[in-house]
Length: 234
Image (cartoon, rainbow, N blue to C red; front, top):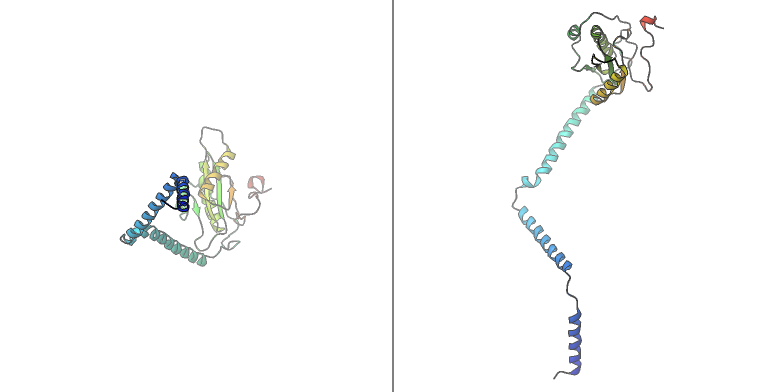
């Protein structure tokens, strides 16, 4: 026979054990997942001791190579900027009033003007131009004017030491000439190939006679051809 006091304690202990809740399924799942995570981390640490370093650090090496190339390119660019000075304003190469040669074909102009890049671009080689200029020219059915225009405008803009590109936007022949639409198209094309600091909307039958008429960029729009020969420059 047990002591009544001991028997009472045993009965209380048994009753408390009978009502203690069992761990829920979620708690069991968390414990299992933690065990799996710990095992995977241990396995990775052990495996890293046997893998070659190149396999572990291939991405890092590639990033370091890119960074090294970028540094070299930036140093090269900084060196060019230090050596290249800004072009003088106004340009010392201006000659004043010049005549316009007529009756030139495009082939003759290509033979005369040999320093222009494909696409009608040019920039100074011994100094850095202050502005990038896009000259947009609407055009249709005026072949006789293309040669004189290009033959005159390329040297004109080069004497002003501008970084420029001439865009000649030609309209198809079977529709009414729409100058404004061609200017809009030229502007969009120039933006895609830019950036440019300013845009000059130019007629192909109107060329400046004096290179002191500067095509420099300004804060406000301005008219470059205020006086024309056929109106006696009024």
